[in-house]
Amino acid sequence: MMKEIYITDYNCVTPLGFDVESNWKALLEGKSGVVLHKITENHEAFFVSKIDDEKLENEFKNNFDNQDFTRLEKMFLLSLKPLIEKHQISDETAFILSTTKGNISLLKNETTLPESVYLSNLAQKIADFFGFKTKPIVISNACVSGVMAISVAKNMILAGKYKDAFVIAGDEISEFVVSGFNSFQAIGSEPCKPYDKNRNGINLGEATAAAYITSELNQSEKFKFKILGDSAINDANHISGPSRTGDGLYESVKNAMKEAKISADQIDFISAHGTATLYNDEMEAIAFNRMNLQNAPLNSLKGFYGHCLGAAGLLESIISMEGASQNTLIQSKNFEEEGTSQSLNIIKENQPATIKYILKTASGFGGCNAAIVLEKC
Image (cartoon, rainbow, N blue to C red; front, side, top):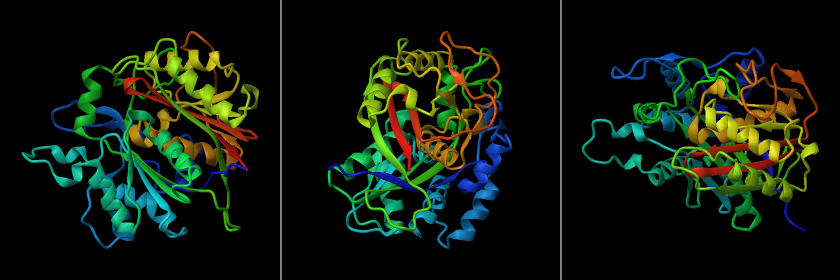
């Protein structure tokens, strides 16, 4: 009999709060982290979701004595610490870090590459701090990285490589990231509106998130979500543009649901990617309709958090699981009027619901797509 793999604990650090409870409260109240920020003197102000520096520093000082960490590393440590305090690290515990850019901000005004800018060194630094005994695994696959990290943990435990895993995901707002997205005119001029007729681009965001994944349950678990199925497909459509036919996302969802042995009418909720760009939202609508999922309640959390890059998939999975635990569907913020060629069941306001099966999807640069199916147990 195949082992069953569960997510039994999680945490997050975002502009809406430094734990899941404060984030959930903010979401229920409709609060968004997306506001105008001037990132650098060389750029105009953009709508982004950015953690307040002073609050971050105060929170870190209250939790850690050693201050020799970058801003992103502090976010990682804060998100992971509560999980480390509750779960054992053994010789068979994996440490998986998901990020797209890591400490990219260290490159500014540098003539040589700082050691911490290498993703392997970043992961090792966090792992060493908490005393992990296995070699860190880094997942850096554009914006599907957070979902892929869950999949990698699940499959490595199934393969017998590890007994459990701590997964962390994170990225921060930086001049490099803002410049990159601005260069191909993807940044919206207002708070983003995923799937809406009047959407005009993304808002960038930053966050870190952490999850504990295991095959061995104990009686102290407050909740558990089984990872029923996963899949990642690269359709190699374009360096930055999504497939017009949704092939990669369609195949990812189909494969994940097939492994999970779940049909379209059993999916209670879809946590979608929903970047609020013209082609991404259209591609998702096509793919979900091809899978007969057009009636499943769906949201994008980008209106609350912006696009958190390597953190997005894990953060949004965590909020989805919290919603299932609280029997509540969270609105897709800023959605007003359907703006895709094929209809979706976009959640317009918070509502009570019984949620057992969750589909989480993500898509990213280079044609990468990923999907996981979670079951509330």
